[in-house]
Image 1 (tube, one colour):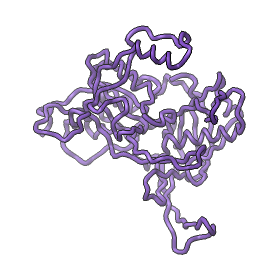
Image 2 (cartoon, rainbow, N blue to C red):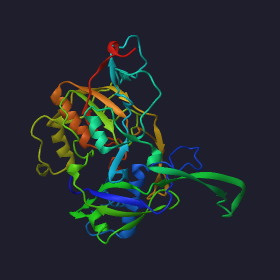
Image 3 (tube, rainbow, N blue to C red):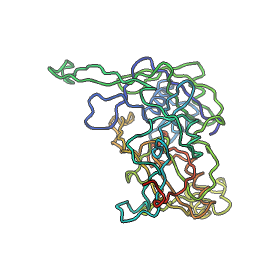
Image 4 (tube, one colour):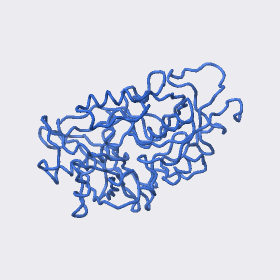
Length: 397
């Protein structure tokens, strides 16, 4: 993680409302905010602060999409100074699941994976709580399974309030049209944390935006407002996807999503083919220098000639139920398409040809925004660790 990132703290003034993308959803707004919500809130605040294009902003021949360099990660709950992320899907009370080998019989698994996922514990419907602190996550990445996780109710409460339907033509209440809307109220010791960077022609726009002190941001639906401030932090003391959490030295790599990811093929990442083979490239020699090429196309062709395909494939996955999300395109004045997201906490298991290929894969997945869509808004970020197969014949029966 570079020093260009800033840690932003959002403190709600009151209740917050975050709808999801389900079509039948008249009043359920007590969801944890999506990455796009935080990204859009900050970007729109930039527009209000600088309504006219600034000298440091690049000028193009087409309609300008301002603040293109804004990148965010979060929002994350921050309780008593400790950051929390969604709990990995393969963490169970008493064990960490892993791909099962030597399973008898046939399976209906998709051809992109080889093995089911299981754990060496008795069957149970008991699950872990949905949130885990970064310090506990670090223990998980090192193979520990006796971990503390938090319930939603330990971070926020859900409050319901009645509402009435308004006729858009008459702007008056529609007779007998009432509904209950649910809202999110954070506990007093809980804030919302967002990491963001936005460099433009050598100017740090995050630093410039907060140079005069705290700001108010419109955050979520129904014009909810939060107080926001920038805090200094030491990135070396935080486990975040912009840096490796632990050294990974194995050909068996596990990638844990800490934010949602959006792919055109549903749950299957865009950097895999239909058979689960990894289609990422790594340098095969000395990379070319950009300044030696007059066009971006020529540079990319030279870069392609000096690279090779990484030798690894997907072998298993543990993915919870997908979530749906849509938004509003401020530039076009129309709703965004609904995306079915791979939820945070999802786990992908890879087997590389050898240990060196595994380390290269872990580095690419940890330092990238590996979402086919909305990567700049914090989608598709995760951390890697190693895993071992479980033999079905040795499991507790």
